[in-house]
Image 1 (cartoon, helix red, strand yellow):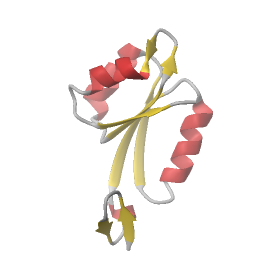
Image 2 (cartoon, helix red, strand yellow; image 1 turned 90 degrees about the horizontal axis):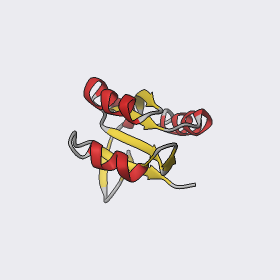
Image 3 (cartoon, one colour; image 1 turned 60 degrees about the vertical axis):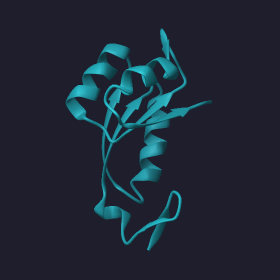
Image 4 (tube, helix red, strand yellow; image 1 turned 90 degrees about the vertical axis):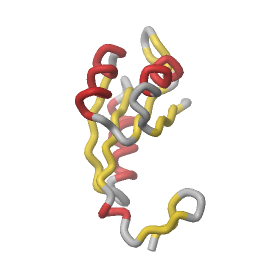
Length: 96
């Protein structure tokens, strides 16, 4: 049994399909995050490097979770958060 978040317990995290959209310009950051997440979850992921691509992926991929870099060329993770709020995924910003 695995304990997740505020006391929520589930029998197996591998039964959970987690759709993650990365807004990141550093592939190594994505690879490291996926390596850790795939040990506990069945992960399906997509990546966006630009704001137009990010907006398209939100519509097409329909993620459960967005993981974004804080600072990206031409926009920020906070800009992405405003866009993602229209689609209601859980949103995490990675600060370096």
